[in-house]
Image (tube, rainbow, N blue to C red; front, top):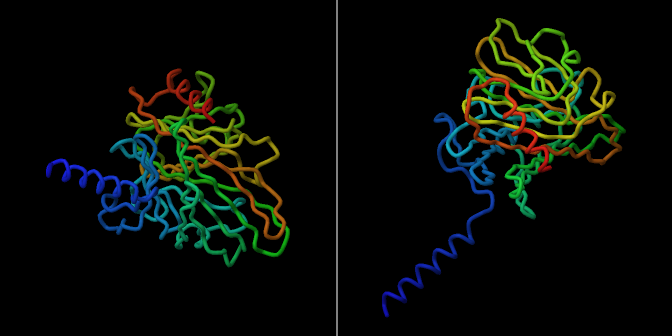
Length: 305
């Protein structure tokens, strides 16, 4: 009898503990040894875990399939994590806007979403909001970025996601006409299997290309396939001097930026632009080289949107 009572009490305690666990728990360990990760928030779906640091620009610091990492963990300046900027860059030049890229975001959990909101940029008079959620059926993490116009003026702006991955033998691919990748020949893309492919290499200078894609961008390396899907833009929709898809190669064998942008949009005072990106991370066996199998995996993600 005592054993039954004890077991019932244990079950009740366990049930209470499970119910009390937050939907987006803080990350209490791991990460970079020189950094306090207690404030990180995690979003999980299946075997995929995304870790975000609201204290430093709401950056995505890690994306893992089980224990395998896909995002750059370097801690050299501007070489790690996934961030969000406003486009076109000519409006702020460099460095990135501090309120969006480095300063603390507020954190809220509401209706199954993790919501992080920046301070208003003193220079641009925009505020950025990031909403993280999951699509369990598609096994995807869904991020909706919003830009709020707090300038009191009619403005035009586009959303811009920048994800840094290591340059250590991976392959980048997307659907675009190879002749439309500019500057021509700067990165040695090749057309095959209905996509354009770039086997990452090393050079002594920084390089960046623009392309008109078809609403997705993929990176494969060391058994992990990262696929990001977003709105497919028409030729006239990107911000001036920008593009739907961009790839930046930092000099040497350091890091790569996988970049995608949304439409250049007119915002009235207090109006909001929202843009959604679906992230998929899949284990795939094989070498990092163009293949019909990799493209098939991407198309399976596109069908889930």
